[in-house]
Structure formats: C-alpha cells, structure tokens
Length: 219
Image 1 (tube, rainbow, N blue to C red):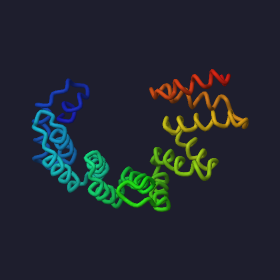
Image 2 (spheres, rainbow, N blue to C red):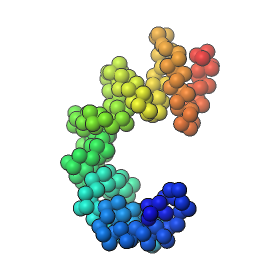
Image 3 (cartoon, rainbow, N blue to C red):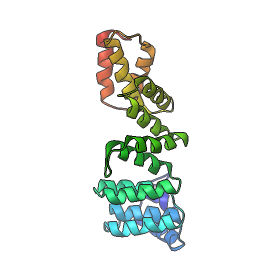
Image 4 (tube, helix red, strand yellow):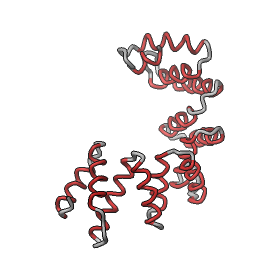
C-alpha cells in the first residue's frame, strides 16, 4: 500500500500516507519497504532529504535479500561522482547474480570509467549479461564491435532491435544510410523500420533520419 501511495499506482499519490505505511513495513524488515523509504529520504519526499539515511536503508534492504538494489545504489553513487563506491556496489551485485550490475561493469571497463580501459574484461562482463538474457547488453556488445567487426556488430544490434531496443535502431538506421551513400546493397524496408522505431520512441534524431530518407528517395 505504501508503494502505491508513493508511485500513484491506481491511487492518488500521497507521500504522507506512503511514509506511514512504508515505515510499518520497515519495522518488519520488509526489503521492498526499506528500499522505498530509502527513496523518500534520498529525494526528500515528505521527509527532509537525507542521503546518509537513504543509503542506510538501502543497505538494510540488501541485508534482507534485495540483490537487485546493488545496481540502483551504484547508479546513485555514479550520479554523485563517487565511482569508487559505484564500482564496489556493481561488483557486489555481479557477485550476487544481479545482471544489470554485471552489464554496468562491462560498460565501465569499456569506457574506462573509474577503472583502466580493458576491452577484454569489458566484453567478458557484457557477454555474461547477454547470455543471461539482458537485452540492452546486446546493444552494448554491438557498439563494442562496431569499429573493428561491423558485420558481427550488426548481428548483435539487429538482435537487440528485435528485442525492442530503439537505441539499436538508431545505430542500425545510421549504418544503413551510410551503406546507401557508399553504394552498397541495402534493404530499404529494414532502414525504414529502424527510423520509424526511433521516431515512435520520441528520439529527435529520428526526424533527422526521416528527412535524410526522403532526401535520398529511400521510402
């Protein structure tokens, strides 16, 4: 009930009531209530913003078995430019089977965020996430190979697109237009599909790509 009042799920948002019901859950060490009450303290919803209190509640949630929160904690530390703590939580999440944490470690090693760039290690993490069915990791894997093995990269990107990744659609649309300009054989309907996906998901670059398609007569 507290979560419903917090998020406005089928009920009007009411932070005071959310705090009341979530506090009751916290008194019983409910992992989800611990996380949600932590959110209220982190963002200052009804209560005074208190990030130290928020992280204390998040850590209690972890102790109660909330493994998926490692990724969330890591992202919050990243937003605060504390990459050391972000990495610590991603490593903990990875070690406890949280696939999002595994994926994020791969991205950080790929881009050298808080660690030395290590493409081999990055791909190991990302591959684990792909094999676990994390669809966004297919897109990341595609980007990782795009400069050195374009055909392999496109296979990952196409699979990511088929699983609903409009970010993959952006790259595939761009690569398709490049192929057209290089006089390579293209599948016009596929490119149109990529561009439509980008536009339907509200990405401004979709309008630009659509304009290019019209300009070059791809329709």
